[in-house]
Length: 393
Image (cartoon, rainbow, N blue to C red; front, side):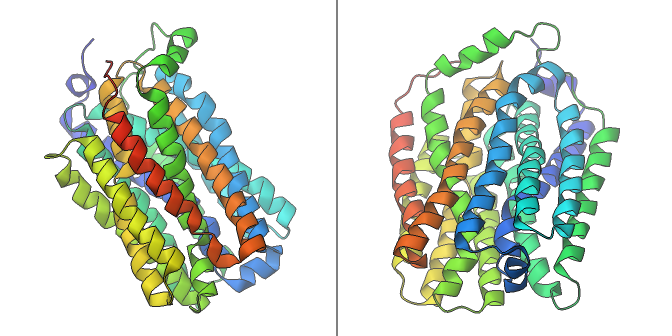
């Protein structure tokens, strides 16, 4: 079977990569939306959202992402990425408009689920597309793609913090919806490579990926990493506010985390040309543990901010590098493997916000960072264990 790089012309490959970057940036906006919006007291008051309800909204959004991801792998393998990316972009656009006009917690909860559905398609299909396009440099290109998750996730809190005195929060959400619709139009007009299994697809065969060596280990590792990233995206402003930072400054510190993610992925793209993928994952998870400990135990907002930046730098390569390792090992049913990985991983993103909301209500707001601290230790141990797993093609 010919590789995708032989089928797709170089200039088209570049255009598709640029479009995938835009799509993943939109997913970054989706993931950081709740943490950013409810860092502003007026939004929390409007929808009657306290720390427990914020955790519930984040869990609902990730539930939408999870439920969709379960079905996406076989769809991508059979029909390709284009249909998923076009549909997902317009779902995100419509959901953002609905969120901008929501006047109750109940409506916001429903919109969060639908927003998660659209975000799932953007996340999974952009990663699957880039993995297909770049067989020879998969690890570096997935990290470069991941930088654009940080562009969206960094851009939203920075933009809203800067423009909150000029535009209303609903107006800024509608602006993000316009960007999502533009992504959908771009995906609609670009030609895409043919689906890998378009003429010989078997759902039963694709489900066998669960028995591939190392797949479950990778899935559990990403479970903890998704929990960690969702915790940081949702609660960083709340944690810094509880430590004494003003609300607007706390939102800026969320941008510090996303800036760290961006810089970490730039660095990882170069490092992965020299070091094994799982070595990079293990080392960065160990560094993340230090940053999480600073966020949890640091006594001042300044020390906690240092921890936030270090967490962003070290979290950055983990997710895309594990996906790249999986793409190297399991090429034929890459969509189904990615679907399994994302499906298990997203359970971590669903569980973590509710767990942190419970811990915060029971033991105080600043007890929450213990969750990513423990998660980072477990990720390091799992990466070391994965190095010993046999490979399968």
